[in-house]
Structures are given as structure tokens and as C-alpha cells.
Length: 217
Image (cartoon, rainbow, N blue to C red):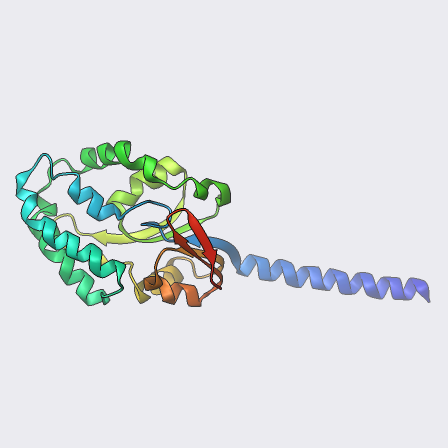
């Protein structure tokens, strides 16, 4: 009798193990992070634009608009459509005329890589995913330096200055699900309630304010 019970128990454990293994293969459980003001101390596109202020007077006329963008973003005053329109004049009027973009991006990160917040290295895992509103031409270089393979950001047509993809607000969830259909977010880190849509699909949410991190879900 005891041998029969033992065999039944063993068979149940094997079946449960198979179910867990199947679930694990179908669903990747991982940590997901916003980038600007979460891992990086600042707004990358704004900082990159200001990078030219000392060397190119042509950019000066765009600075007031960029500062307004910062303000509206901080107080959650943008829709996706309004964000695209707000950046349009800078991207289409200045960005597309930068002839040394790749070289300038390297110089930018040589100076600003130190703004990656130290707390991130304490929680970092190899399968982390970065989902950012920042642009891919800026993210590519810093992700390579940090050794992060899984990331997605906004994408800009370098010829027209128009957004091909804006990874912002509810668009983040749509883009995330398209690129990582089997991913399940265990922990999501962000600095902003603009990411409410991402918060809703995460098990746990951490709000980042400088180097202070507070679990809010």
C-alpha cells in the first residue's frame, strides 16, 4: 500500500513538474525598466539637444520649445499625438541636418554615461528589458556599453525627422507585446505615471524618484 501511495505521489509530482516546465517555456518572467529619469538621470533626447547649444547657435531657437516639452512631460500633459507634434519642429528642422550624428552620439555618451544611476547595477539581470520613449539612435550606443540585449525605444526616420515609432504612453504596451509576446512582467520600474499602462500589466511596480525607489504595487 505504501509503495502504491508513493508511486501515485511521484506520478503527481512528475505531472506538476511537466506543467510548470510547459508554462515556463511559454511565459518568460522578467524585470522591465523605463530608461529616462529611471535608470538614466535625465531626459536623453533633451540632453542630446542641449549637447549642441555650446557649439551650434542654430539650435538656440529650439531650446524654449524643448524646455516646454520637459515641463509637459513631467506633469503628464501629453497625449501621443501631442508629443509627436511637440517634437516635430526640432526633429524636422534641426535633427535631420546633423551630419556627424553617429560621432556625436559617441561623444554624448562619453560625457553622460556617468548619469546611469548606480542602483540599477544592484538589481540588474541579464534578461532585463528596457522599454523607453527615448530614441533608438541614442539607446543603441548606451545599451551596447551596458551589455543590455533586450530593449526598445522610439524610432525616428533620419531623412525626414518623423517618428516611425513612438514608444510612449499606451503605445509602450502595444510595442512591448508585439516584440515580447511571451513575456510576463514581474517587476516594472519607472519614474512616471505616464507609464500607467505598463504598470497595469506588471505584477509589481516600483516608482523611482532620483535614487529613491518605492514599491507602489
